[in-house]
Length: 164
Image (tube, rainbow, N blue to C red; front, side):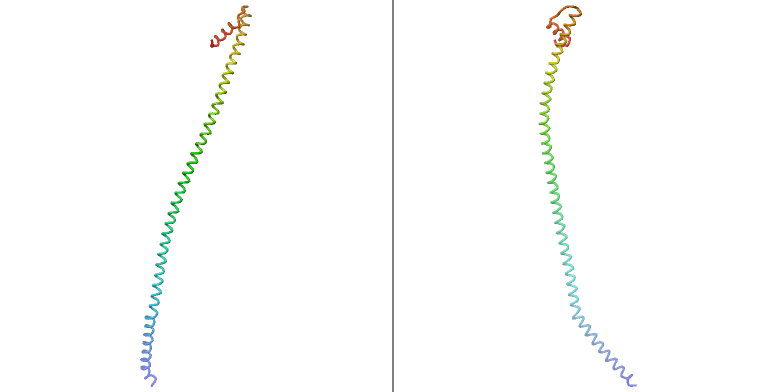
């Protein structure tokens, strides 16, 4: 059969064309597409590494900014505490001044009150002496019938009271 005899020639011909097409595909892909793919991969890797480096720089800048912020906050806190302490000290000084002023006023009032009490006490004692001297004169006159002078009765009352 002639069709079977041609089978070997057709197979060699098809095998030749298969090798030729595979070679063309190999060289077309190997020489044309692979460099483009490698360039794309390298560009992607370069972009990723650049992005990572940029992210690292941004993180370092953010850390530096945060550190500066914390330093400013600590400084502000210290200043606020200093201002508060100064205000507290000023308030304490003002309060002490007002207390001292009030104390002087109270001392003056107490001194005046003590002076008036002393005057009232002296007046009361002199009135008591006077009344006691009159009472002693009346008692001596009623009990013994002897009349004594006002000065003698006053001297006797002062002696009894411990003032004479």
